Length: 367
Image (cartoon, rainbow, N blue to C red; front, top):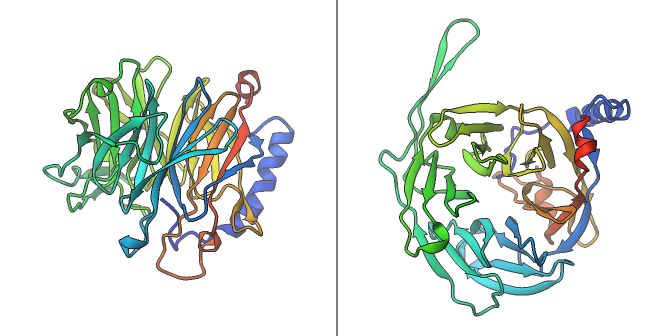
C-alpha cells in the first residue's frame, strides 16, 4: 500500500533521476524503461490491486481493492480483459476488497481480503458465474510474529516487538509447479501453504513460515506481500512492503534472509528470465533485480494526471504480470494518508493498467 506523510522526497528524486540517466547512457547503471498506458478500468471501478494472465490466450484478470467508507460506497470487482485490453466481463464482489490474483489450470484464483478467503472461478467467467470458496484464513496464535533483534554498528542492539489484532491480511500468492499454493499474510507476518490447491475445496491451510522478517513496523503497515519462486524453485522470494525489502527463503524450511534493501513499498513480485521484477509503489516504478539483489532495470515513473483523470506513467504500481513480450502493470493509485492535498492519488478519477516491453535477456545480462 502507498506512501505515508513522511514521504516528501520529490526534490530528492528530481536530483537523483538525471544521475541514473547519465549512468545508463554510459552503460554503467540500470536500464531505464518507458511505460505506456494500455487500458482504463470501467467507469466506477477503482484501485486495481492484483493481476494475472492466461499465458495461452493472453486474457488477463484484475482484482480491485476498494476499501472506502462507508462500505455501501464500495464497488469491488474481478475484471476479465481480452489480450488487446478490451473488457470482456466484470464479476462484482461488492464491499469486500480483493488483493492477489492468480491463474492456474483454467481457473482464476483471488484472495478475498475482506472475507479472509481464497476463492476461484473459471477463467471464462461472466457477471453471474458462481464464486467457489477454496480456503479460509483465521487468526494465528499468537497473532503477532515473534520479536526481531537488530544488531547495531556500535555493538548495541534493538528489539522490535510486534502487535497484531488477529486480522488475517492475505495479500500475495504464488503456485509452485506441483500446484501447491503459498499465501502471504501482511498483518500477522506469515506465509501459508495450501497443498494441491487446484484439487481441493475446502482446502487445509498450513502455517509455512512465521519468521520475524515477515513483520514490519514501517510507515506502511503491510509486511509480507508479493512472492515469487526462483526458476528451480529452491528459493522463495518475498517482498516486505513496510520495510522496503526483498527477502529470500531457502526451500523448504528457511532460513529467511534479506536480499535487497531500499525497494520502498515492495509490493507485487514475479520472477522472469533470471530477474526479479518488484513493484516499488513508494517511488512509482518497477525494478528488476538480479539474484544478488542489484537493480538492473527500472521501469516507469509518475508523470502527472491526464485530462481524463487517469495517471500518466505509473502511480502506486501494486503488481505486474507477463503477457508475451510485454509486462502489464496495475496502478493502484490509492491515497492512504489522513491529510488532504498531500498525495497525487487524491486527484485520480480513472484507474489504469500500463505496460512496457520486457528487455531481451542479453540486454539485461550486461547490466
